[in-house]
Length: 189
Image (cartoon, rainbow, N blue to C red; front, side, top):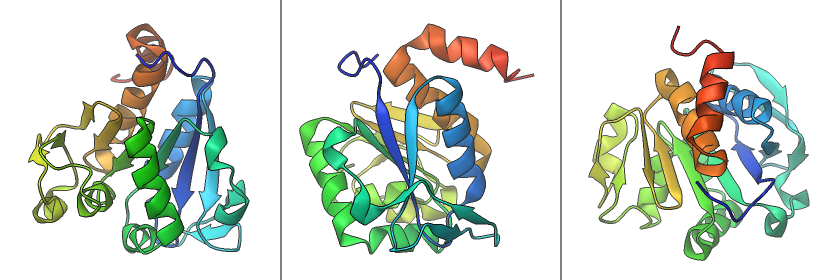
């Protein structure tokens, strides 16, 4: 459990083409657990359209985000959302800074490939969407629903979004909090 942040603050980044279940499940469960999570569009507009043509209104845009006030970053997958996140230089610079500072970086499905491309998974256990495993340069693939390695949390796919979110809750608030949340949402049933 991370005890450095009594009231953790996270940001979840949205790019056109994001996977909506991976984004919204994480936002929902973190907020249920009392963890502050801000949705952030990486463009200059708050409207972001998912890979399945669902348009959401982000809480803020990247240029207005105070990264210094955050404890962690969350990257949902989806295509071309992951490609769009990876192409966002201000975001990738912050991902590298957070990882170097020991602050949490969380990515699910295709998004862990961003971390691999930045060299952050070299020699470290991680998981990602099976079809993207060849892009996980240097990572030790676990094939697990979620994998926690120090300050990096990775999730396998949309079907593992609850496991991924619960791993984030457990990281910040401990196993008891994650277990209470599992019970509250009847997971697994």
